[in-house]
Length: 414
Ligand SMILES: Cc1cc2nc3c(=O)[nH]c(=O)nc-3n(C[C@H](O)[C@H](O)[C@H](O)COP(=O)(O)OP(=O)(O)OC[C@H]3O[C@@H](n4cnc5c(N)ncnc54)[C@H](O)[C@@H]3O)c2cc1C
Image 1: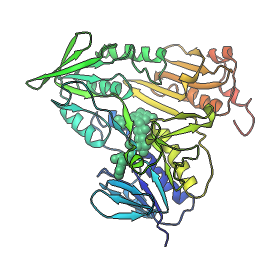
Image 2: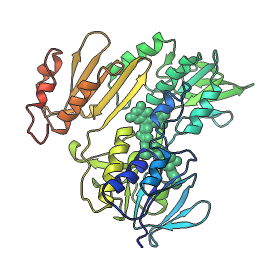
Image 3: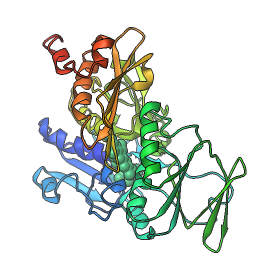
Image 4: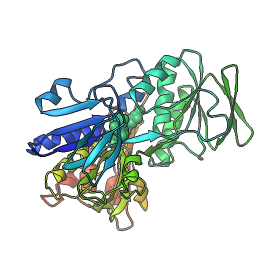
């Protein structure tokens, strides 16, 4: 009997790949191995509903795994990949052979590297245990300091305000959301945070933490200080490449895969936050994305290519964030744009279109109440995927139908 398909990492990419293998007709054994004890769950709610008191949201019901003939091993960590023998070894002993292997190991929070960071409790937020610990620790009136004004830091800030804490965000860069979110939208979010009572300190580079009687004195490089009862480090994540690196696979800002998600060993693929891949839509530029949709898309694609497919990555990147009553969405690669066109809808809603030097749409981003920008961004995704070069004045006019632009696309693209 075939040794079957083994997937290391039971997150969004790994779970999606396991079910997609079955959907693609793969009949061999499928084993999905996850280091966490919980039934695989969605990560985005951790910094939203779960911090607010809600329950974990499973990616699939427990019964689905057995029904699909997927062996789910929870709370098991893979320590090594032995490529010559085509087997993986578990940390707690034993091993498992594979015909095809998918690494979907995700990412881990970066740790603060300043003096004093190890001398007291510093929370991070990546998994369910982190979310439950943080939720239990935040009390009304407590001073919470969040290091990092990125998406996770700001979602935690909003949730901590919701729990009645006094919140300060310390961001080393000159503005919030310096990575991947245009300045115009970050500025609107900054206003929302301030008006909800969050103290924002940009260009505040943390230099040291001094702990006294359980209180953290966060000293910034400019000499200013912030006192906090609870500290959260939200300074980004690093791809989990340790297994791949130890197995001698190429690593380049993540496990390096080609456009079909193959590592430097053709029997091993990688998907999700852990890997970097060349994206044909952006001139083959190597990307490593940290978003729910990317993990889903790559998981599906990996399953196809594990079963003999030869398809290249083609999805238009997309992510969202919810903070207070505002919904942010980003599609494509705004940073690849040479010019930005704003479509002002009035009220709190703004959509930005990012055009490449050749006039093609390479990104779109929007912010507005609830889900109000979803439609614009969904249309923009299709335009980006079709390499459309829409007229800038048309994009800027809120009375001009975006949907009408889709009808101008070649039939296969629209
Ligand atoms: C708090 C939070 C909020 C987010 N909110 C949003 C959002 O609003 N919108 C958005 O688009 N994206 C959001 N994201 C990002 C999105 O959730 C991730 O990009 C996505 O979950 C990545 O999926 P993945 O399968 O690649 O990795 P993961 O979900 O990290 O799964 C990897 C799994 O592999 C396991 N693993 C690693 N190494 C081993 C090993 N050696 N042996 C066994 N198991 C192993 C890990 O324990 C983990 O369970 C958020 C992420 C977080 C943490």
